[in-house]
Image (tube, rainbow, N blue to C red):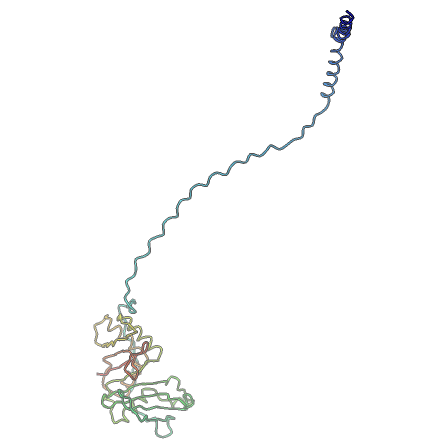
Length: 302
């Protein structure tokens, strides 16, 4: 019985907190609500500062590379040019004959007698098998007289003059009246061998070294589509057809120093013949072997 009475008292004490108060609300709840309102009002008066954060960047994947177009194919190579050998050059339609000078006639000089000229000579003991007696000509006005200004061979059987060496361009005496030209020395040796100027049939230039003549020989080989390595013989006629490769070649050589000199000799000493043929060939050594890049020139009178 006492136990029940205690429970009732405890219950009544608990109801005290929830019974309505003066404002009609339970006393305990009113106090709690007032406390919440005060907190709400406090919070409403505070300016809340929410820290700003940058948005997380969105990393978009790189677009897939576009497939590249394949490069265009290279252009086709040009068609091969047919090989025509060392003579593959453009040949002019017409090479006019050079205008050669006209010379008056004169007597054959003697370079080796008296004091009019300062030339000496030395005849080789052994003649050249092809070109006959070989004479070396000296002057103090060329290399101080230590080297021959001309080396010339005379073949009486062939009626030929062979020029083995000729450096007359570098023979420059103080007194120009004492200088003789190559033509003078050639004809002096030819007539000294018992020949007349009219006997002359051939001037042979051995192993051409003069630059202008050498270049002209190369050009003639090219004009005729001939190799300069084997250097086959090419004979050219003054009477070849106009505009032909042969006449073009002849005229190309006609204007070179050795051929001009031969024409001068022909006029001055009344040879009475014209230059009718020009022949080029590969130069041969003493054993008869053709020397590559070396050439001979024959000037033939008829």
